[in-house]
Image 1 (cartoon, rainbow, N blue to C red):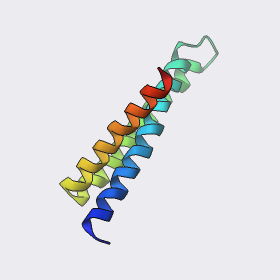
Image 2 (image 1 turned 120 degrees about the horizontal axis):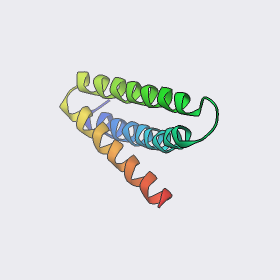
Image 3 (image 1 turned 30 degrees about the vertical axis):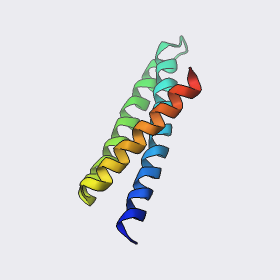
Image 4 (image 1 turned 45 degrees about the vertical axis):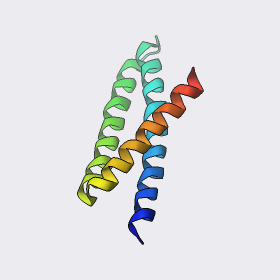
Length: 88
């Protein structure tokens, strides 16, 4: 696979991760503010899970090099933009 295709895959993967990550931000905030029993604890667990997942993906991208890391970060920002547009 050539460099352009690899960067395109990292960009797409970063976008998907961004969509999932920022959707989970909203969900975990809703859980932490809910009055349900165990909601805040489950929300905190989701915070730790999403941070560990994002950190793992970005570490793998960084091991691949600067290009994949930048492409994944750009995809993450695109995913954030999409979620913020969808919610607002």
